[in-house]
Image (cartoon, rainbow, N blue to C red; front, side):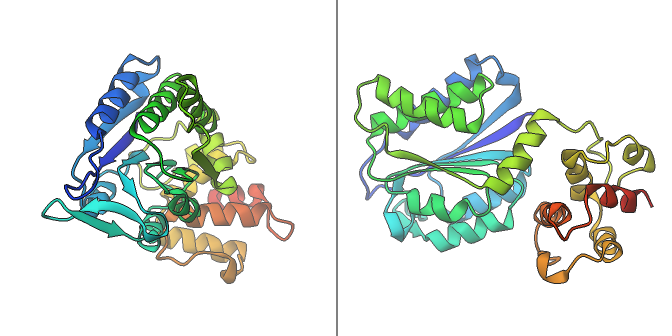
Length: 287
């Protein structure tokens, strides 16, 4: 299944005009010409208002990369548009809270906006990789970073490598802003994402529960396949599994949290010195 890239652009009429159409076109063209173009699908939304981000994430659970291009104000937040097309700030706290609700769904966030490092630092608590800008960045540098970043992704490179290619694209143009983009990494999510990319699960996505046959085919110590199963079982079965394994309640996110977040917490506990081990989880699922 291809990964959806959601490109959000906002350039309010009462702010300095940005060439966001150029950035969107360059990203689109770079992906279209890439070797792995079939692995990505680009969705673009312009004149983004505050509701647009939430609705887009709710409407499409296959969004893996979110790219925001526009204005940033540092600690005050990112600049979206209101109904009149004027600037409307969205605070760092509101953005972090929103991404928390989608923890486990989005793999990478690119904030191609001035002074967006503070938002990147907050969002990375819930996302594997987040790129922000540690100071103001010019239009040309921002566009060049996007070209280098998505050229590398389309070439099959990792998020970390793509970040480096983006910085190099700025540097190769002789623009003295190649140190402006900064990459934030959530090490816990990084491990899971890397495992998924190396060992994509071949379990049917159409089933809401896991059959005994698919469980029997698993390697007991394959964390990626266990995560894939735990993400899909219904909440009542998941809670029953926690009870069976005697998982300490204070270590698990509540039932109101995303299933992926709870599944990762379970696996992390299982591999801890006081945990039951991955093999025990598989045995409990088999039973």
